[in-house]
Amino acid sequence: MTTLQVAPLRQFLADFTRLVQEPHGQTEILAQGSHLLGELIRHDGWLPEAFAQPHPEHYQQYLLYADPLSRFSVVSFVWGPGQKTPIHDHRVWGLIGMLRGAEVSQNYAHHPDGTLQPEGKPVTLQPGDVEKIAPDVLDIHQVSNVYSDRISVSIHVYGDNIGAVSRAVYLPDGTEKTFISGYSASYLPNIWDLSKEKTHD
Image (cartoon, rainbow, N blue to C red; front, side, top):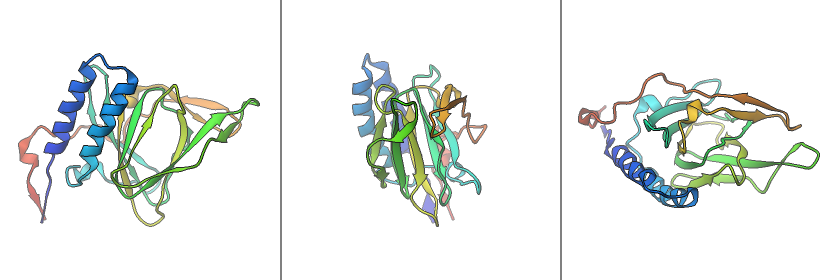
C-alpha cells in the first residue's frame, strides 16, 4: 500500500509564488528556487502517476502547474528507456530537478563557423540533484535518459509557460527550427483536492 502525498507540491507552488512576487532578479530566483526544488524532490511519493507515464517512442512533458501570470511553470519530464531530446534551447531561465532514475545533459555552443559543438563535459543528474539554466549563459543542450532499461523522471521549473514559448531545435551545422512544445497532457492535476492524499494498492 502506498500513499500519494501531494502536499509537498502544493507547498512548493506556494513558496515559489511568493518568490516570484518579490522584485528578485534571475540570479536570486535561480538561487532560492534551486533550494525550493531540491526540497521538493528530496522525497518521492507526491507526483501523481498519471504524470509519470512514459511513451514508447518519445519523452513526455506533463504540465503540473502554470502560473496565471506566466511567471513560472512546473513540468514533469518522463523519459522512456534510452530516449533523448533533440538539441534545443529554452530562452527563459529554468531549474531541472531529478526525481527518479538519472539523465545526462550535454551543453552546446556556436563556433565561429556557425556550427554547434559540445561545450564542456556532460552533466549527469541523480535523484536529488538540481541544475540551473539561463538564456544568457549556456542555453543550448541535449538531454538523454541514462538508462536503457528503465524510465527516468525529472521536474522542471521555467520562467514562463514553457509549453507556449517559441524556441528552437538545432542541427549540428547550426541550422535552427523554431517550435512551440505544448504539453503531453491536455489537463492539469487537481493538486488542491485534499482527497488526492489517499491510499492506493
